[in-house]
Image (cartoon, rainbow, N blue to C red; front, side, top):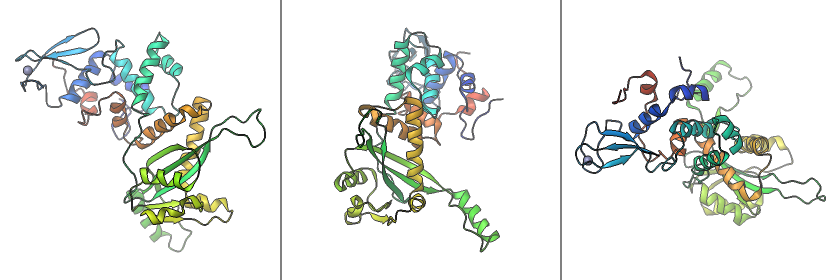
Amino acid sequence: MLSMDPRGFPTSLPEFQRVFPDETACEVYLERLRWPNGFVCPKCSWQGEPHRFSKRSSVVLRCRDCHSNISLMADTVMQGSHALLCRWFWGAYLVTTNTPGMSALQFQRQLGITRYETAFQMFHKLRSSMIRPDRDTIGGQYPVEVDETYVGGRTRGEGRGVHHKATVVGSVEVRRRRDDEDRVARGRREHDGGKPLKRPTYGGRLRLRVVPDRQGHTLEKFVVESVTRGSEVRTDGWQGYDNLVNIGYRHQPIVMDGDPERAEEHLPMIHLVFSNLKTWLRGTHHGVSQRHLQAYLNEYVFRFNRRFYPTTAFNSVLGLAAHSVAPTYDALYSGAWVHPNQ
Ligand SMILES: [Zn+2]
């Protein structure tokens, strides 16, 4: 019996490897994703069982009517690669679900890949879609917390006051859990007059950016590009945010009185994000140079924003997002779908 989370995704690499043990299992998945209702020739629209054969770096389906060849790996990150499909699949699982992230060397060891160059190229290709920034704006119906922090930088051996820390600004949606709203309502009834319950909120979508400074126009530009106009924006009392109300945001600043607990209460979500981000950067990468920091921020954001959608993250790094049909892992697990060749 496989243990999976409620979203139907394996919860560990060994479980994942049992779902995708070999090339056939991966080919079935790719074909199923692309043609959930059976093969349809993209050239002549013929439907039915195609011929299947393997080429050096792809599996090819040939239409029985017009004899067109269609590569299963075309338009994916696996195109042109000689590495085994299941290695790609296992690698995609690792980079999207391993919370602390990993280095190319760890990646190579985990997958048992002999050549470092092969592992490095796979790792790089799988990461490339993670480090492309999400472009749409967040907020709207959800309030957004915005704050800045300092990241990284080695100060050892340098004079006092000299630091190479990068300034990072972030915005995150504050969402409420629906089931928790019900629980809170129950709790209020049951504990009427008692101490207030903790607010059952969680982080929605996130955006992070390296910025040169904390000046008003810098922070404003980030908010305009990452937060939907008209959204409620919560910040601390820093003057750099003073103009937000004039450019169409419902600005909710907190007046800082030197009490850090008040800021914690006002901006709990973005502070939690910053804290986890720093732990991840320190723990996995032993600090990151400023030149590469934005790529790591994007990777962090990619995982954060898809943490409830592991299947989406997995398909996305393999370049399968374009074929947007939801995969049916259940059918694959249960064996309900039989490969036509079997
Ligand atoms: Zn055809």
